[in-house]
Length: 478
Image 1 (tube, one colour):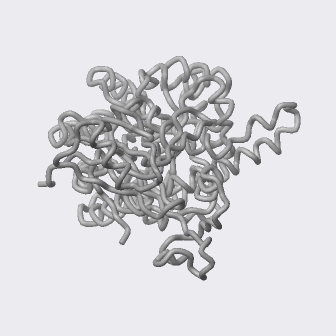
Image 2 (cartoon, one colour):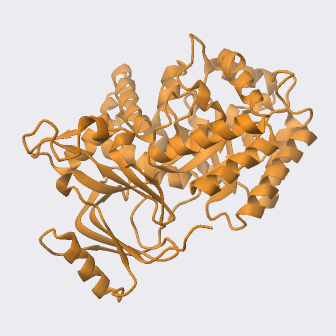
């Protein structure tokens, strides 16, 4: 059993993105978190920067003088608190293949690399090794919430949910549904729509038995993508989502060959998005991965249904799928978050996804020669970090719960430390060598906005010193 939480006041500099494009910085800040991991106050305390003074003033002001722990974000002007990252799309089962693409594109990559690996995780011993490593790897990169695809195997999918609970990560865990004999290999598919639905129900029941209120882990319906599922299965999943009020995750419009396959298999539907909508799978709790080649009409439909899109820039580039027009989605009111999409994406770091989101948006702007206002297509640092936190939370139905530092939200946070070389020594702060604190270098004259930009573009897991989920410490870099 985990030890009970105590009231805790966190002090230091707090940085978050309360709205798209806005970076809010609170220096000499104090955030009070109660025994349930809920933020009860956020203050900018006047003072000389002495964090002990900040904590005492905040405690006194809120009647928290007794029985309170204090956690200071030390390191002066090179360390800060930031909300935990939200990964809206990651295949935990594919971690061993991270970085392996060959010269393939989506459909042949699935056949060559993905399906053989996923099928091997019918072994619980193999699944335990992979899933334990996957959850640990995401936590050390500051990911406090992840939407996981597992495999078609209920037992190993249940194991992934158990591991998330044991390690304290907030997660959505899905048993992958695929029953189409036309597109799925004989060795890796459910025998029928009924078998796939039964497997998914088993996972839903298991997760709800372990976390009845979904405080950390929730089940999520996971049709792999429309071509992998028969119409009866899609219909059954839509009905289950409605009956049990379940979230949904799937893929959409990732690759042009995939689009052709959807048109061939679903000739009666007007679009890829329409396939999902006609089967009851476009809801306010649906997150759609990729969305690169969506039409304007599909974007309108997705916005009307309240569904979100997981932007996966690393895998989109790695598999040569294309560039998602994120600005256009945002302008049309579609919710957007970031996904690492391991193993299409080679890294489980949401920070990497954020920097790639900025990079590919600039390429899209450069290629849009006919657009007189093409500069608007670029995503800036603040916007990318919003997608990595609050944007992702909104996609997963966690609006108002995580993604920022606001009263009533849960304390999902990471302590970020950057290398301070302003002292003139070869290694800056004592113990802050490049090997322990990564590649980000602060030279003493940068603003907080510039430090955050440096972190997004050159940071990595070495900068993530502590990670908290719902007020509980789940990772600490020693």
